[in-house]
Amino acid sequence: MSTTTNKKLARTIRTTLFYFGAIALCLPPLFVFIWMIMTGLKTGVQNISYPPEFIFTPTLENFKAVFDQYNFLQYLMNSLIIATLATGVSLVLGLPAAYSIAKYRQGKIGLLVLVARMTPFVSYLLPWYIIFRYLRLIDSYTALTITHLIITMPMVIWLMVSFFENMPHELEDAAMIDGCSRWQSFRLIVLPLMRNGIATSAIMAFIFSWNQFLFSLILSGPKTKTVPVAVYNFISYGKIDWAGIGAAATLIVLPVSIFAFFVRKSIVQGLTMGALKD
Image 1 (tube, one colour):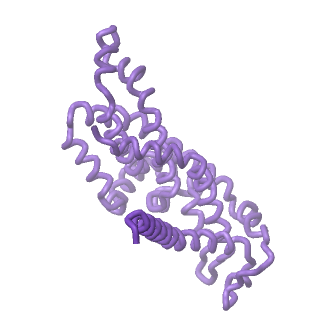
Image 2 (cartoon, rainbow, N blue to C red):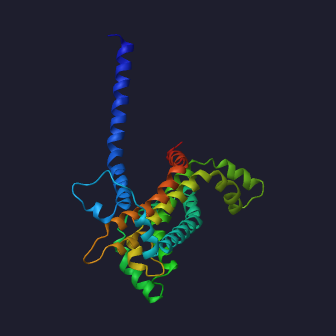
Image 3 (cartoon, rainbow, N blue to C red):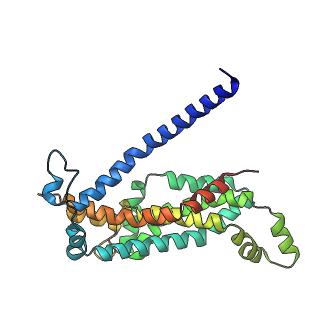
């Protein structure tokens, strides 16, 4: 067997193994996602039937009931408002912080931010609850936005540090020689160059804030309940509405999944660029 044939055979084997591994990794989450959608499209009787029914007539009654009986549109708006506020505040505060850490090599501050992100969220709950109860901010957008900053701001900072480290600082120096202040150089020169990283950070922060459950469970109320918490409406002492849970979970996951699908190139490009080191 010639050398060329051996190389082709090896390349074919590597390609086959790569795609086999990719399919093996993708199948379990894809199956769960499809099962969730099917649960929302079945009736209550079909969902508890055994063996499971894979061929059935889909119904949208569960989705209609979610909006008509449980005020789900309000929960969607609450999640949208809180995730948008948390992402916006994280960008306003996190971008200068990431720039400072990268430019002045403030590794200890960066490590402190990372520790704050890695600390279990449950350890924050009691202090937050006591503080916000004293300030009468329970069931308010302010309280939930502040708590979500624990998730979104470290993510923005650590994603953006690598972008700022890779930026040619000669551009800043040239701008400052031409008369720009440090702030003007940051706002007019640095931020436009970092737009891919900013977009990636904003997308990731928004998705993680949208999916946050624990803080919203404890600190929200009737006015600010978010969609992950609203799923509890379908669980009672004597009954679990699987069809309603499937419909609600689909409504929670689908908007973010569609959004992530359309911006996937920006996410991959931003994360790849941020990972490059000179």
